[in-house]
Length: 301
Image (cartoon, rainbow, N blue to C red; front, side):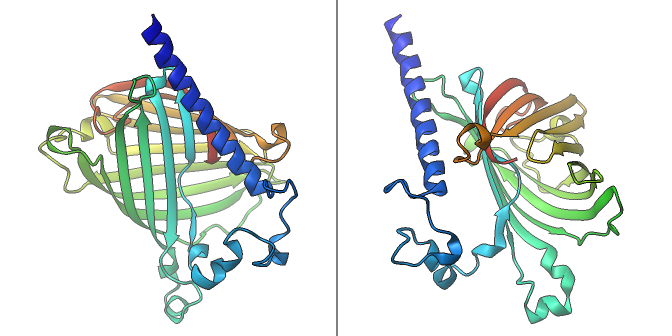
């Protein structure tokens, strides 16, 4: 009995510590927490008045403007703590759109490098180990907007790319595969832009799949995914990912809402609720179906 209480107490203390650190980080973003005064607008900052290195970025980090959010970034606690999950993701625009080369060949500005990492964290165990992590570097090209900008139909894009995915394990626990994919993206909005709908079907083929440890991955991941996302401006957004494979369907639902109105407009996170009923949610146990309900926060939804 004492062992169980100690284990749960340690887990709870760890979770509270993470949340406290994130809250402090958000407050620091909103203002200078060392003095209790708000930070000055970026246009008026100087090296003397701003203790951060942000004013120096244009001098020694001129390429950061090419980095942007890609897929959702979140930290979600499972109602069963062994199902905790987090994800980071970004993309980098490789070619300078103002360069002579881009002016001559405008299509190259759609070439990006991207990286996504999804980790499954078992907070139920004493040592709180990572059960599995997927590392997903990617190269993709996305077209310009082919839509003429009608009253409802605001976006039509074509995306194509190559993605590697592996879990970084060795021997029998190693999993690895590669995808070549194509994905049209449709964006519809309300007349006053009060809501938006994204429809993005995705088709892929496997290339150089690891046939020793995951030869039948295609039976659980399939070859098709339909992404739908509908949202209200500065309010709720509901996203869904639906896959069909030989061994059955998979679905992941994500519901988000901005948290800053409830946190003194100081911390810009989203409340994030996720439901997963999916095969191959992670690579290690790709033959198993996960049933998980998670709740936490996201920075990008």
